[in-house]
Length: 133
Image (cartoon, rainbow, N blue to C red; front, top):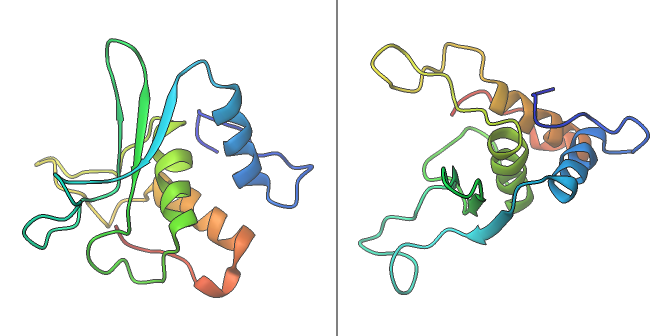
């Protein structure tokens, strides 16, 4: 698993529980909120992307969750969006791999998607595995 947490192998859901345990015991303040753009949320028909940011001065981690924009190839319930952002980005400090120009490169193994797929397998294997950003 990533450097941010260890799976809890005593649990029925080792990745999810390991992630949540690390979030609760983290020295960082973690804010989880619904992603919004302006008043009323959506402006100009564009839904904000889920994202995770860390304040460089305070170390506070903000996890903004929303349904992904566009097709990611499989159904993505809200709890998976949170799992992707919190367990895949925030706690281990991971980003999606990019090519030399800074574009996300789907041909490179993506540890964030691997963590999301672990959570998918734990909670609902019928959802399928995500293979693209």
